[in-house]
Length: 185
Image (cartoon, rainbow, N blue to C red):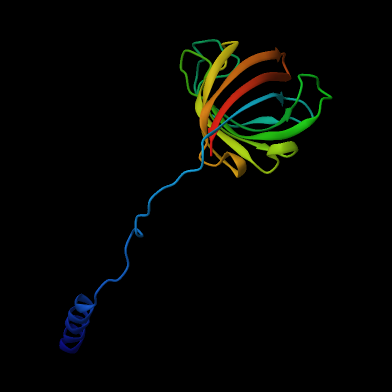
């Protein structure tokens, strides 16, 4: 037992003498950003609900006994979506990418959603690039604004905003027009 204590003390003394050479940062360098670019995007998000091939589905819902706001979407409902982005509102228009993300209905007396979505472009000038939106989305309003908080590819370090306009809504289909202003390098 005494030998064990002696060994532990020797290890503690030896380890306390070892100099730590790592750092949590590297040398600060001057930042020379490229010129800022402003890009305007216009497209339509097409969402299909409750059909044979839905693009948005409920993945969780709170067990709440009543729905005081009589909304068709109860408070604390979480959706996952993978919606096509198209160049026009028509169902058969060209697909230019997709929006993948989550939306949770977070308003107790409203149909406000908090959404995170990555809008990835699969064709054209911005193929392989995406913008990220993380914002409150008051879905009951016909026109609304959400925040662009980042991007990848040609939209690295993106900021900006998107103006959304509900173009068409019925029980199984939603078409939303997006006018996006992206500031990026």
